[in-house]
Image (cartoon, rainbow, N blue to C red; front, side, top):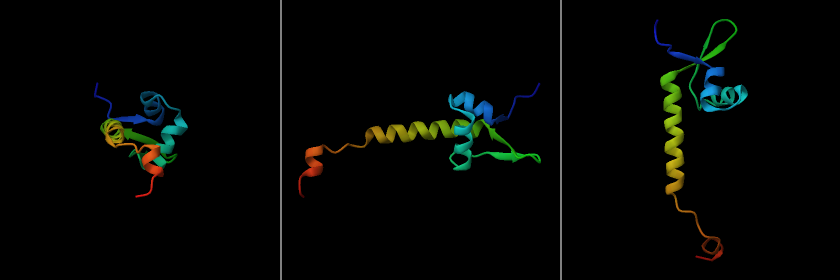
Amino acid sequence: MATQRFLTLDDVAEVLNVSWSQAYALVRRKELIAIQIGGRGQWRVEKDELERFIQQKYAEARASVAEPVPDDAEADSPS
């Protein structure tokens, strides 16, 4: 049996532990690349694309941790 290449939005939602509508919103905002198949326009996400999305989110999280957060005192003081 061949390895499954594509995931449904239900599968994506399960992997990400989110609702179907949240997975669909990621696709609609083009944060997660997907293709439509068939006349009813069912969405499919390639496994590699889902992994790329997850790695991108980890990279964004790491970058936000590395950025210094200004102190309230520094933000309020005139330059």
